[in-house]
Amino acid sequence: MTPKTLPFTKQQIETIIDRHPTPFHLYDEKAIRENARAFNKAFSWNDGFREFFAVKAAPNPYLMKILKAEGFGADCSSLAELILAEKTGITGESIMFSSNDTPAEEFRLARKLGAIINLDDIGHIRYLEECAGLPDLICFRYNPGPLKKGNVIIGHPEDAKYGFTREQLFEGYRICRDKGVRRFGLHTMVASNELDGDYFVETAQILFELVVQISHALNIRFEFINIGGGIGIPYRPEQNRIDLEAMNHGIRKKYESIIVKNGMAPVKLYTECGRCITGPYGYLVSKVLHIKDTYKQFAGLDACMANLMRPALYGAYHHITVMGKEKAPHNVMYDVTGSLCENNDKFAIDRMLPRLEPGDILVIHDAGAHGYAMGFNYNGKLRSAELLLRKDGSVLPIRRAETVDDYFTTLDFAGLKTFQG
Ligand SMILES: *Cc1c(COP(=O)(O)O)cnc(C)c1O
Image (tube, protein in one colour):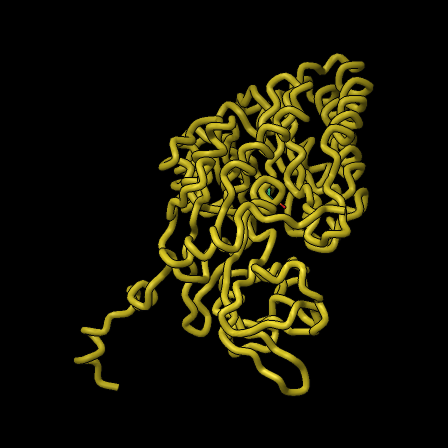
């Protein structure tokens, strides 16, 4: 069980809404920091452990700066994400560049920033060498294929576009070793939103064994092992969060029986989680615009899937709290919708909620990762603002909402006047 709580009262959120119209995403700084500290503590048995926050989950430099202060690096996979890291003051080996199908200019910027480069394909060794030169530290992404079961979001590893096969890893490290690369890392990422801690123990074991085998075969030493992201969060109240202490107990035992026993220690452990770092601490705050009673009851919000796409994309559950009606009987079944001309623009289907009226404030939970970030402009919908609820209870806008002018900036209306249609 994971109780769905809020870091604000109805009165507090009304005061915030007076100054910042809905919809918006609100992030809880205090909870993000506490969670980051607990995360670091759980892995602290490993000397040199580091979490590289997956920027794609919440690409806001204010959030990144908070996480930097807690000791995290940044996991980037595009030009814009690299620039965000740079602007936040995260450079050098505090950046993990885990991209795929990578354009040359991204490799060039990653090299310029001194990022750790994590290659997705054996062919990229040559590509990187030609466009930006080989660094002296290189990491490869492993795809275990049929050796490991995937999960729903990522799918079967052998169908996934990511990573090297096992044979390609041996070949790739050999090529790099022979070209003078001296520092090595190994990475994998085979799960997303996984709530079983044993899954990560098993992933660590696979990587530990591989490191022993590759080190012996090629006479190289591994500096780090990146077990990826994918630690899940309990979106549903009846789910439990991963016990990070217990998971680390399992990983540590494998580390001792495989890495230490084979004389490979010390090897630094890295993670690149996004979801479990900010997900539970971000809320999409919205108001009911219309109630509609046809074959079903619909509650239409002023937010839509442009603000949070997960329910429409994956059928994902996001808990909803109706402010001021928390204790009222949840005896009306609603589809909670947005205004896109797409019938799957629904935050919830057949959800039991208290009776709703226009103006009710609805808070959608667990929107702090892969929430705002997945926003888009289809149907001319605009992305919402992002607010930071600070430790002292004050509110700092950390991104303004888009305006229609933002939406039109890539169009040339002056040119249209003289354009002969
Ligand atoms: C998406 C992604 C992550 C973060 O995943 P979460 O599920 O948010 O933890 C980390 N690494 C890579 C390579 C990714 O693509």
